[in-house]
Image (cartoon, rainbow, N blue to C red):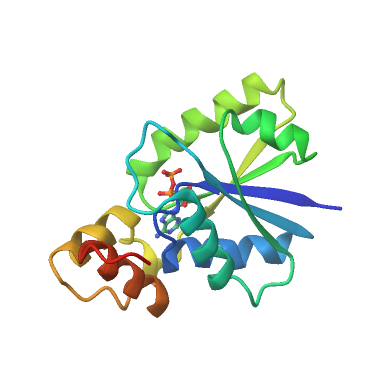
Length: 163
Ligand code: ADP
């Protein structure tokens, strides 16, 4: 079975992530989308909230699993017998960081874990979770960026309401 993992912060999931997920899911039998539980990164949503949003947003794609992990990606991938990482590339600014991560994972895994990049669809090239949060924090319209239920959850966070 051809398996891959798409790791990320997904704080929160955007149409850019969903585009990568849909396209990657077409090329693999099983795609695990995994939320990185990074204690060093301040997030708007908890890991459980991010997992729940990803599950809801991908519920129509049959070969997707949504999980979370902490620690090294290579250990997590090995445990699940996954040898391919999916990452999205928006612009040249993503490239250096992504290339370094891909090389590091190859080195640490002794060549067992390779990375495949999908170039962003042009309509989502400008989209990032951070910009979506910034726009929402000032009450701007984020409907072109995220599913409606995610937009509502973001506005609720900024209003201080519990989800
Ligand atoms: P991280 O903090 O790990 O970069 P993100 O949730 O920001 O996590 O992104 C996860 C992956 O999705 C990264 O590979 C990132 O480049 C990719 N990505 C994010 N937004 C887009 C987008 N609009 N188009 C394509 N890929 C994207």
